[in-house]
Length: 281
Image (cartoon, rainbow, N blue to C red; front, side, top):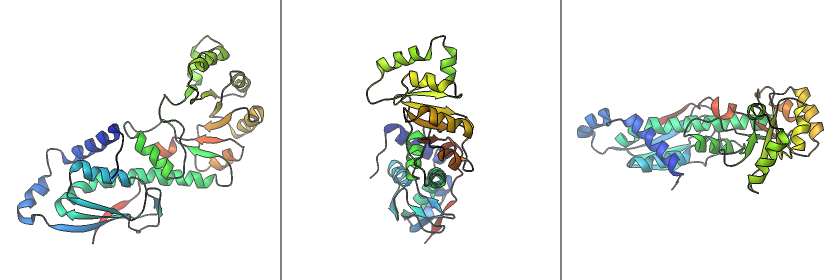
């Protein structure tokens, strides 16, 4: 049985309440004549995809107290062809219908994130570059969306602000303090398990970031030419991350510059949902 952090369980519970409202008027209307009719259904994708969200569906069934047995045919992260069943639902017809929309919404969205992530990972195949998520996620959905990125073969950047100290360009520009002095203050408080990342959007900022002992240097919205020059300047002294303006069309070219990491919000914020339906057996 799947258990998520409390905030995720609350999110899924709210999703159920949002759809069920004050009750299921159709189900309540048909209860008297249908009684406890039991049926079997299959969850089927209409297109090829990477599956994500199975544990979330299992949790929805538990939280809603539905009289439904859930039998997945694969694990999260599985690659399925179109029309290959994902799972089976067996139980009360009215409970399955009450659960259907919320469960499919979750599967469609998270499988979309995993599938688009997989496309990015495939695009950089043959390089040593990792595709990672960012903190640009839907409110409350971060854990599930970032898990979906992992299911698609991507990697983690940071879950939240407590995991990495990032000096962004707008913060640096707003302070009348040398970057090296700001970095010193951060290094003094930084746990040994965390890193200091410094964002650079010009070549001139690279030597300053190195002098400030950045462990990760983020090249933000740089051209391919400037990224190549930055990689040479950094010369292995820090992890090199690229972000900003990354698409499926250009991600391979950026990876071929020798950067270590490419972070993109596309995989969490722009992933199209997978078409997934519920078919009667």
